[in-house]
Image (cartoon, rainbow over all chains, first blue to last red; front, side, top):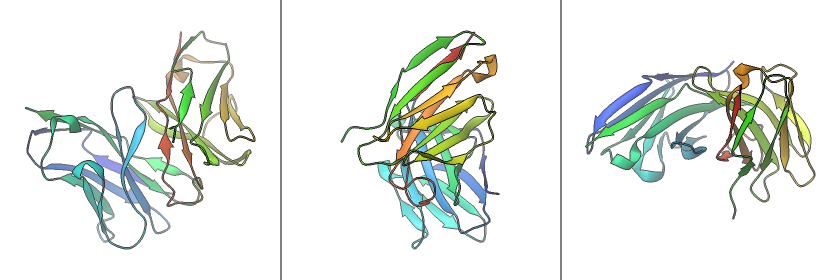
Length: 111
Length: 116
């Protein structure tokens, strides 16, 4: 069975600092991995996804993530945080049956 | 292209009642998935419908049911509501659904259900 673990339920960074949100997964099949963002009172919006091919994936709003099979990780990064990045971020893994989400990481950006 | 719409956005019900939530997917999308989001349990998969057939089901009791119509619109029903059913219910549509693993899901804004 597949599962997702997001390390750190809350992450706080200063504006302009590096953002690093951690995600580790387990899957019995080659994983398809996703990062979603949720702003208050809204649904989830896809940031980026990894299916096959290049392991460094670039997404919207300057975010990127790197698939590391040996570490079973798919960490999300952004070089310079912006106040508008404050939101909740979810990592997800998909197999042939459903999509499983991590518990989420709430990102706070301090001025 | 219009996004995923969910109605109603907010709902207050009493224990023991039943509720029906509606989701209209993006035009052309044949798959609709439903999720329950709570602070304690996070995002949990309820079920997926594809071309009017339930294709996958999560680990929820039979009080939770759904259906999909020929125009891909979907409804979710919860009978005999319990306090623990209070949650944000999210609907997501995609072209291929969860069996097309690369097919990303587009989420609606959700229906916030409060059970008193």
